[in-house]
Length: 418
Ligand code: UD1
Image 1 (tube, helix red, strand yellow):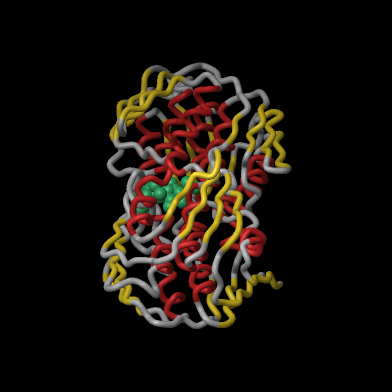
Image 2 (cartoon, helix red, strand yellow):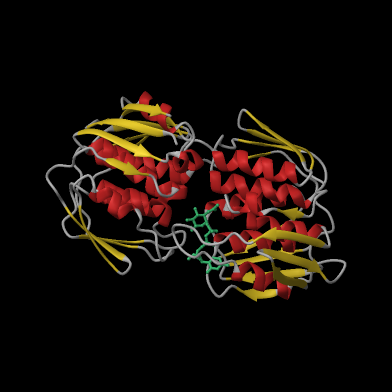
């Protein structure tokens, strides 16, 4: 398994080009299964997950390819009506295929995604809403077998019992081809959901959004259009926290600060300075990092769970009884034992971590555990004295395009090793 070796401490200085958003690309790529036709989706990051989704779609018979950050759809007809375990178990987001495919075809079978390292992550919200839309769901042999009872899916008036990004995307895609007006309440409104809606509307869908209510007027057909994916706000947030942790100065290119408003306010209160350099280019710097008392992860527009591990790492030498509470996933703290290997003083109780600053961190041998947690190890390695080896970096390759090259360009002594 590949590893990276980082020599610390280091101050991050230079320029980082922010890639297209992974979490926006995946559902947009999937949504092309709603329609025949062709289109080009640009600014798609070249990551393990996006490449993997291309293989899933190709395995289903879609004529698609992916080169130089462009996902090209030549014909998205699905020939094989089963997404196999071998694929789905490696990428949970593939469950979002179910809604659009069953909206277009009468039957589809998809492997149950199962749990993952950050929690049980059920799919009940997806399945319950599809049942209401007239889909017969049975679970057999580890597969969800979905059969549409009518010619079209039924439009529904539905309130999600819990806010879910994936369920919102899945059901809103299904509803674009449903029979009538669907109203979905308590929806996720992350920028990635909005990007999907913008893409679908450009293809002829009739979707509107007000607060957490999404209204979809079903249409019989969509016509695929070209689309440019929004910049990755989680990647940007991760590099910003690395700037803060190392008291660095970096120009972020292709950065959209409005997608990170809430966390940026927090980071500014901790000493981050932001200066607009040109359109979509911002200089981020931090001379004095200040502590913060409390951070709670929440659905957008709140503090993102995907930046929780990175803020904990950033606070390791500054936090004074700083408390970070995880409210989205029940088990998203597997980075805590890894961060302790650097000498961090972290107390974990229920869903809250308390960080008490230490005067020094020391390089260590650690293991990447999930995409975002892995970047927290990079931040800690850059703050620590000596050599850090991070094993299992395929997690980083799932979410951070060219992370080693981008860090190297900012002065980090980082090497990839087989
Ligand atoms: C997406 C993001 C992920 C991010 C997460 C929360 C993608 C590819 N992934 O994941 O990076 O961390 O949103 O912002 O976009 N839940 C249920 N039942 C369901 C569905 C979800 O109980 O049917 C629970 C989950 O276990 C979790 C919470 O709802 O506790 C939120 O999960 P959800 O928003 O669905 O996350 P994902 O869409 O999987």
